[in-house]
Image (cartoon, rainbow, N blue to C red; front, top):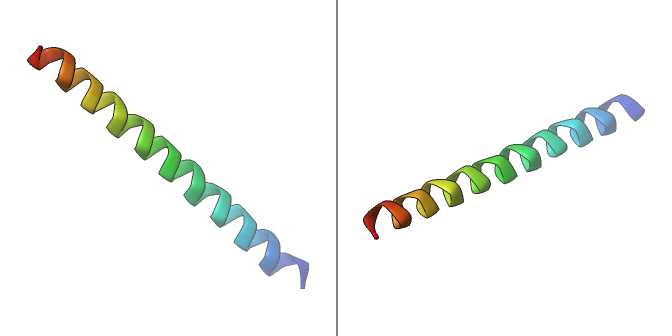
Length: 38
């Protein structure tokens, strides 16, 4: 019973980390573009 929960937790953690990484990179791209245009 513990294995599925741990797998779910690991996949959830990975998806959250991936989402945070994507958000940070997109914010960085927007910041660079705004600086480049100005």
